Length: 273
Image (cartoon, rainbow, N blue to C red):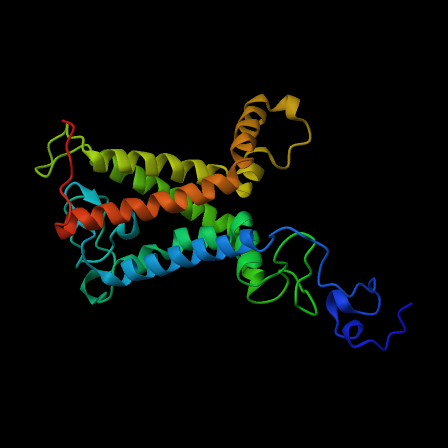
């Protein structure tokens, strides 16, 4: 019987005196650490890559393609002012990379996403690192205090993500033009952009906030058949939210990298017609 004097029982958290006196760190025998380690490695790789590209401030436009990291370009210094849905909002005083302006919104949407919270809570904070594995923290305040209380603005980032997805859709349409802005072009980059925008929209629409907006606050689905069908459709996507989160994360990085290769001259965009 625990007496309450054991050191491990007075350390708080799952080792507090009110919890079962289990001396083992956990009872799992599988390689439970692989999943959080892979998640942390994947997210860290994207953070490193996107940070490099955001501050690179070069090779983000190769007609007719503009990197999704740099669209819409809202400063006078942008290379793509004549090619895409860009507006000279910030003028000439904006001296740093144009990507810094726009990346706040899609990154904010992903950072506050319910799935990504689970991913980096487990992968980076070990809160908890895996099912049936206790977290090392002595107490848990949830998302009720700063800075985690900011997670509650996820719905507003969803609205911004819809706008960004719309702009990227426009960029994808422009990818069917050649460097002389004549319609009828289709290259490998066009396919890359098409795949990316499909995944971006699938991930965005499968968001939990979207599901609530479509079918929330309804007492009788039978009285709202259209919203009910939309809710069912979004629910099916929502069941694959984790998969869509990862595939869209990879696709947007690949789309940017493709533009980088073409713009830097390392790769020539193959044309189908």
